[in-house]
Amino acid sequence: VSLNMRYQRGLSLAFGRLDFADLELTGDEMVEQCSNSGETSPTGAELLFTDDKLTVRTLHSLNMMRKNRTFCDVILHVGNSELYGHRAVLASASPHLLELFSADDESKGSVRENVVTYHLNGGFDKVALEKLIDYAYTARLEVRAHQVKSVFLTATKLKMERVAKECASYLVHHLDPENCVDIRSLPGIARNKTFVAQVDSYIAQQFEEVSQSPTLLALPCVRVEVLNQTRQEMSMVSGDSLCHLVLDWVKRSHEDNLNNLTEKTYLLYLALDNTLQDCAELPSGDVSDTEIVQDYKKMSKKIINPATKNRRKGQIQPAKPRVLMYSRTDTLEPETEQDWSLIASKRVGEHTFLGLVTLGSKLVTLSLMLRLNQPTSPSPLPDTQTRTENQPDMYHGLASMGSVKCGAGCANLNDNLLVCGGYDRAECLRAVEMYDPARNVWAALASMREARGRFNIAVVADKVYAVGGCNGTT
Image 1 (spheres, rainbow, N blue to C red):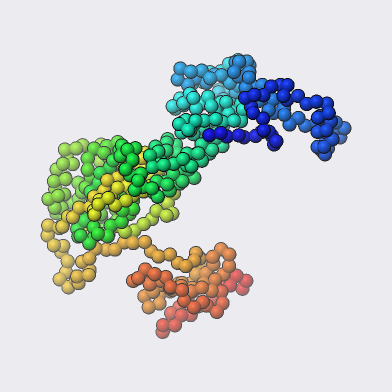
Image 2: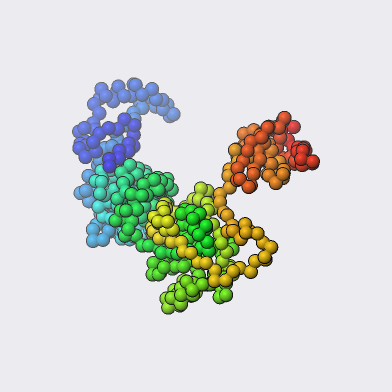
């Protein structure tokens, strides 16, 4: 990676070969520059000279002094190494070092030391830090391919955003199925949402190949089995929805003790509130409390899990057939500090799924299996209930309207939802749409005669009447 950042326009010199003689202006050059600049002095001075090469010369001089340890007033300790520099230069390039130096000055008051030593903790890489110090003095960054990740991490810690952005861009352009998981596992990557989104998009698109990589197979694996009461449920389960339900269960039940998640295979069921629950907490006597569940309860008692032992138990919901088909991922954004997100999933068998998720910013895989758990006794349903009422409830994403709108008039027309008019942030609308819940589809109808918003509509004898409202002007 080669990153050039110019402090003055027109700078194109190679910083490593600068010499003071190269920076001298002849008298003719100085006169020509002054006469061609066209600038006027606010003080009324007759001679106005702007030295475009002074910044370059100053940086070069400071860099030479740093290498010779001349006038250095700070030493950065990284491991057993010492890196010398000038606080003013380093602080101007790194907001993190600026905060560090400023806090130290405030604590010492008027007392000043000639040379201040700082021990940098937090896993700073010596080579990466050296390259960033060179960049601070030369505005030039040169990094070998295998060093880009460590430079990115160090630049992120030092809050050197332009360098971190350039490193992230390089990593994105060189993603492949073998390295993408390693890159997604970088500490602190969740702070750079654009970078994370690009890496996640690549993994999702190439997940078939990524799932075979040794790096992914070496990740911690959370094993979960989910009980289903009918084969119809099992055939209609969505991998993404199942992964999200498991992700929600982990965050709700094991957020404080993620390290124990890989110790056993968890057996879960879908409760009435559409959340996954541990079968170890399934009430005795429930129709789903079969031999499979009872064996799991016995095994769970042998494994003491501090997370479940100390956790306050909420109200336990009974099991009920539910089909996992809903989706709510499009509007969710990963948290800045704690990253809980589904990156990709795929079906690996008839009733098995593989997912790649982040649990509190830690990358893990989900191994999910659906198991048939037919009730030991029939549910106490009235004899008059029809066969269709015994079928599992269906959950799926609702269809979207044809356009975004607010302030619309709504009514029930023949068990369909009628939506008229409204605003789309730009204009008042005449459009009319109707939603059919039985088919989960929206249909466009004939538009109203006039645009109208913030109004009521009434249905009388299968006729729809629009009452009042505003058209944007009246």
